[in-house]
Amino acid sequence: MIRAVTIDDEPLALKLLKVYIGRIPDVQLVASCPGAAAARPFLGEADVLFVDINMPDVSGMEFVRSLENPPLVVFTTAYAEHAVEGFRVNAVDYLVKPFGFEEFKEAVERVRNMLSLRARAVGEPSQEKVLFFQVGHQKRRVYTSDILYVESMGAYLRVHIAGEDPLIVLGNFKSILDVDPQRFFRIHKSYVVNLAQIRQSSRSSMTLSDGTVLSIGEAYRKGFHAAYQLR
Image 1 (cartoon, rainbow, N blue to C red):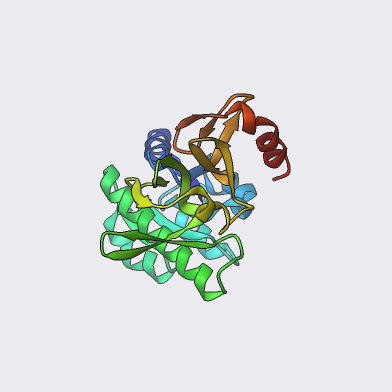
Image 2 (cartoon, helix red, strand yellow):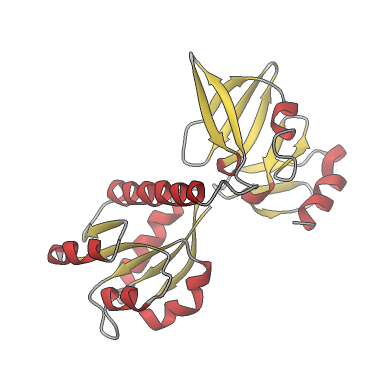
């Protein structure tokens, strides 16, 4: 999950960013801030800042420069002439207003790639385990954290991945559960779910980060709720 903080003194700009973020399943909006001061309490929770440059209190550029260990930064501004300066402070991307959803999605993909590179540079964390799926004549590498849930289809599995079309692969639930038992839990005869992707749950159902609603089978309820509460 990519945790984002947006900073802009224009309410409409913040609203648009919220809409765009809501359309990408693995991006979570931590805070929507009208200025740099309002964003400071949330910096420790952010993987990326989407920051306007021209703001009345402190400019986005000044704000980013003042941070000792900033999250990744994507500048959003109406002024293209600041682009070179933006990349000098190691911004991941620079979006010139008005930008569309496709441009925003491409910026998020750059952020996603940068976060993956950073994780690999310091050694793959224990929670970032990997599954390999045979897709056609090729092996497909998928990080377990990117999987929303896995659906049984007889001898096949439908692997639902954040921001992608599902993969249809030969396999069974055991091959998923054995790789990352702390992350995955069987909630139904037909579903194994990524516990970290659950947005909310009730006694008999749950909602995932992309809005998918799944039923919790009666035989699995007690075990699931115990496992989910321990996270």
